[in-house]
Structures are given as structure tokens and as C-alpha cells.
Amino acid sequence: MTYKDVNRLIEEGEGFEVEFKRKVSSPEKIAKTLVAFANTKGGHMLFGVDDDGSIVGVESEKSELALIEQAGEFFCVPEIQTDVDIVPFDGKDVIVVYVHESDDKPHMFIGNVNGDAEGGEETRVYIRVNANTVMASKEVVRILRSERPDARPMKIEIGENEKRLFKYFEANERITVPEFAKLVNISDRRASRILVALVHAGVVRIHTLEKRDYYTLAYNVTA
Image (tube, rainbow, N blue to C red; front, side):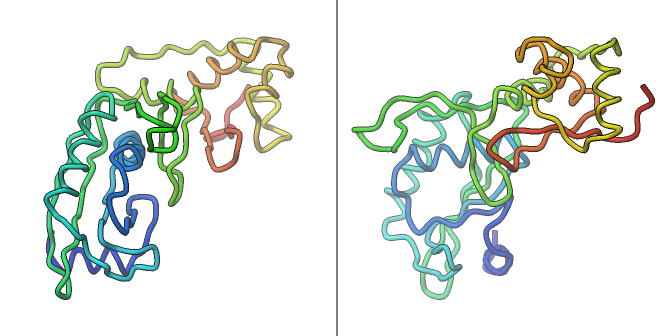
């Protein structure tokens, strides 16, 4: 990672695969972002860079590197390994942490909700949505598991429930798990499994841009 590489990332700004951090506040807060990047498409974390892209530099490289290592080792399950560079930038040092997209999805965050001693313990899966780190729904977690190289092939059968779903898509753009469950009169749990299987098969797409996931048809299907 060179000066030019860092400058390019800063000019592009925060986004799906880039996040700025003024400093390493706590290993738990860092771990959430590590988990999100590893579960999605990977990404860079730049420490010593403010939200507006201004360079503030890191105060103590040794202590901050120790916290970053601690974040990946103790607060991420499975553990997350990162590539770390210290890049001199206009007289200040920027720590660049690169997280690879993982083959061991889903990674989980284990720690305190608020990243402090008073927070409650939590175990959650996070993903990257646009420029944000968000908690993954149970459907997204199932899809992450299905993306593992060692995952069992998922078989789908096009039965009456699936046919009614495709018919629904002829007149509607999207559907949620509760809406699908109500449409075909099945439990939310069964509806979720059907939709996850269809996502894995590439027939349906899942969207996580809103408070509740929704699904759309990936392409035209004849019921």
C-alpha cells in the first residue's frame, strides 16, 4: 500500500469497501466492521482519517496495531486475519487494514453491544450495506452459509408455493418473508427457507437496504 493508493481511497470516500476511522476507539467496535467486510466483499479500513477525508494521523502505532489485532482475534468468530500497512502521509501516519472476503462465512461478532464494560454481551453477524455496517437477518446468515466452498449443494423443487410466488411477481415487484408466508398460508420459518433456497439458486434476489429484507425476482420465470 503506497501513498498514491491511500490518496486514491481517500478521494473515493467512504463506501461499500472503504471506511475511515479517526482512531482505534475499541477493539469491539473495530471487530464489527471486520466482520462486515469479511462477510461481504472485503474492504479497507483507514485509521487516522476523519469522516470528511482529512488526515489526522494515528497517535500510537504500536498500541493501535495491538487493538486491531485483538479485534480480529478475540471478538471475531471465526478469527479474522488482516493485512496491515503503515503509510506515511503528509507527515502523519495512516494505518491501512485490508480485510479479505472470507471463505469461512458467516463470521460473528462476540462482545459488548456498546464496546465498553457496561454494554451487554452479544453475538451477531454483520454485513456491509452501502457505506454502513448493519446486522444481518437470519435469512442473510443462511445465504452466507450457503456461499461457503464446503457448503452442500442446495436442491430446490418448484412446487405450488413457488409457482404462486412467481405468479405474485407478475403483478408485484417485491415481497417479504411475512408477505410470502401469508400468500401461501405457511409459517414464516418455512417461507424463509423457500426464499433462501431460491436466492441460492439464483432465481430470487435478496435486498437488505431497508429495515426489513425484501425479495425480487432475479429474471423472468414462467410459472
